[in-house]
Amino acid sequence: MVSATASESVTASVTRHAAPPPPRGRERRVRWWLPYVLLVPAIVFELLVHLIPMVTGIWISLVKLTQQYLRNWSEAPFLGFGNYRATLDLNGVVGQALLHSFLVTCAYTLLVVAIAWGLGMAAAVALQRPFRGRGLFRTVFLIPYAIPIYAGIIAWKFMFQKDTGALNHLLFDTLGLPGDKPFWLIGGNAFWALVIVAIWRLWPFAFLMLMAGLQSVPEDLYEASAVDGAKPLRQWRSITLPMLRPVNVVLVLVMFLWTFNDFNTPFVLFGKTAQPPAGDLISFHIYNASFLTFNFGYGSAMSVMLLVFLMIVTAAYLLFVNRRSKRA
Picture (cartoon, rainbow, N blue to C red):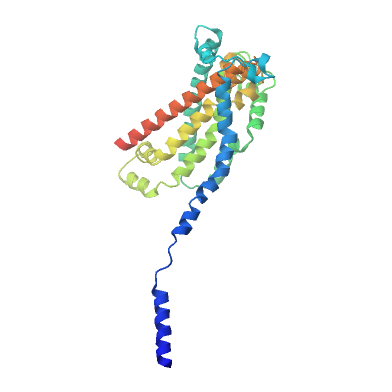
């Protein structure tokens, strides 16, 4: 009797342990909503910070929102695409000024991105291999990127002064260049002042990204190519550039977007209302159209067109890069 009872208990225990676990379908059905609930705060924050202002800006671009209607936006007359037609009319004053600002911004962006990338690449390659004092050079090179934007630009603004600026003192008083000291913040020199400050601010970022990318390049590739007789320039073209291709794809795009949308540099360097035509970047031009002439319809239309232009350029750039990578 005892053995039979023991046998039954053992059999029940084995059966209980061997039985499959209960189905968890109910638990899965209950928790399917959990990822969506976790996304709700991010979606709400995105709506508040980005989408709602964007939709508001598009609506403003379709109405005649001037100083007369600032107290009650709902009374602003609806113009449809009237603001867009006025800003794109190259025979009108608004269209000509926008085209000039766009061309200045394109030249500014090309120069800044190209030179900043070149300086960053040269510094990253020079500091790729270890040597005494490499850490000091890395720290010094990153100082412009670590300094607050406004503090750095204000320092450059003082250096660009005609009589008391450090730049003219170095060029004309110390080095003894002939001629009169130029005005750097007015006239045609304003464009080059913008370019100098923007390059000074941007190239450490390119250096930091490229230096991080070079850490993943195997040293064996350089040693093997050196044995085959490859010179440093050939190593850079055949090894460094192809290995840094993923980094450069993102880096160039980010630098382009930052530079084309640059507002802080002209705003701090020239002030709110004193920007010269040579330094009239499109972001500052839109600011003046909105907050100086109080024609928010024009300013919003320009902003929407700028957004569309940058989206088209970004899509074309990524499409071109993807096609090249597939061919390679």
